[in-house]
Length: 233
Image 1 (cartoon, rainbow, N blue to C red):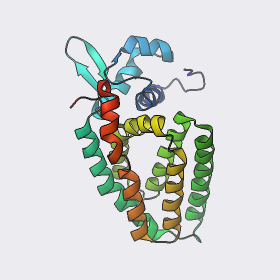
Image 2 (image 1 turned 180 degrees about the vertical axis):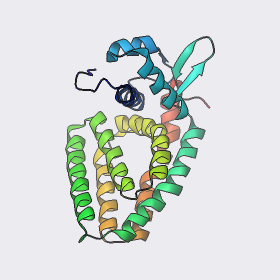
Image 3 (image 1 turned 90 degrees about the vertical axis):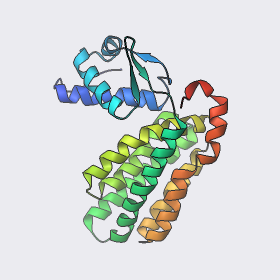
Image 4 (image 1 turned 120 degrees about the horizontal axis):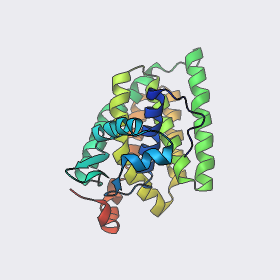
């Protein structure tokens, strides 16, 4: 972990620490139930404890970290209840947002032309990561695909809520991908969703995105049985 190219500003260091730690949680480098310590992470990242403490505060709000009285902080266990709640919120909010984008999409408008190029680049890179079986970059591009489309709505509150929810589902998705290697399936689903948006087909966008978000439902119990030490309800 290297912060040499990061500004020394407190806000930037805090944001960077938050993103690095969050990525480690989502990709299970920090396993559910694992103890995490401010001083140790500060040393690894080359920063003081203050940015780490501020990053922890945000992760606590997302329920990705838990406080243990007299024992410090630990990575939150996966929870079937929390995963189901998160999935419900995402279907309710994200599907509505994507439908609005589909309705408003105008390929003749410069904003949408630029957005089109961004998404095409994301999909091309994600397909390459799928072929290389690069778990970490694949998931980063997965988030980037959803975020880029959501950002085009201009609804900062919506984006904030959905981003806070995604961490719980993404940990489960990471586990599932390790087991099944369904990389290309997800890229193809992204491609189909994007094509529905380009066609201004809000109904098709809704159907495809709902299925895309719910695809882990069938495998959740299998993952719980295989990784019982990661789950706690």
